Image 1: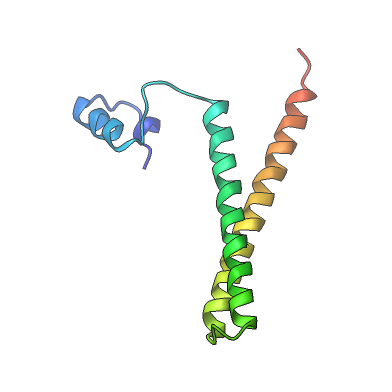
Image 2: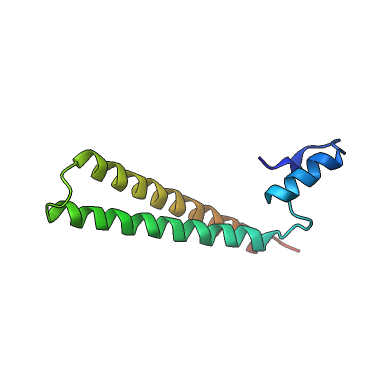
Length: 103
């Protein structure tokens, strides 16, 4: 939970607890933190796709017989990929909108 959006909260205890947990940093990274988060999401989606492919191979070779687990892994990878694509599309849309702004 990011407490930096709360207003009129001046407790140093809350700020120190947030900084220790890594939820709040002393500086605002802006676009850099957004880009790192997006790249982390891409890497996570890639890992899930690799896990799904590995599970498919294991199932085809007969090492795994539980179709429920296979379907769950495939669905998780599909959801991660669709979410990543949606975020990419929104970022491209935002970039185009910023580029079309007149100064």
